Length: 216
Ligand SMILES: [Zn+2]
Image 1 (cartoon, rainbow, N blue to C red):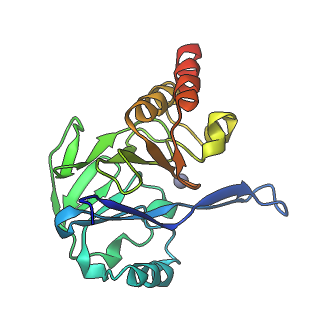
Image 2 (tube, rainbow, N blue to C red):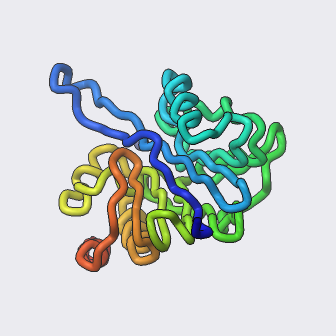
């Protein structure tokens, strides 16, 4: 088999207004397993706190036990992205947004420069949805080229044509979000958004996002 980092979406996220109650937004995140080269396994965004058994079952289908996870990344600190981080206590790093820790030790990493998990997987800052959001950049991805697991920088593919979809779920820095959306599209062949299915980045998508950045 080719030497690639396997990017596996365990669950596709979703988000929508509850048709029965306009005060309720129904949401869960996209949860991704990276089976990295040299056995370095990463889980990105661990869904809501009630989903532990589901995640363990899905990992088992890929022959991964919780103790096989080398790093946990939550793209930001919202509870639908951090809910099951403590299933993975063998991990060398727990990264939540721009905070990197192991047990009671916080890595002093300010400002947040790209943090290398392996030689071809890194965590970079992508402020926007929250001020401390990050994305995971996987080179040599099994999807082909570079895959960006972007968290809520992208809510779902549809938010490219309809920016209201990412703006209405909250953006702590819209200007930065426009900029980082375009930046990530320029560097990635695939984007896995925070609450939808992964999608391939086309030239048309890149141009659209550049235009939106310029106009805002
Ligand atoms: Zn989210």
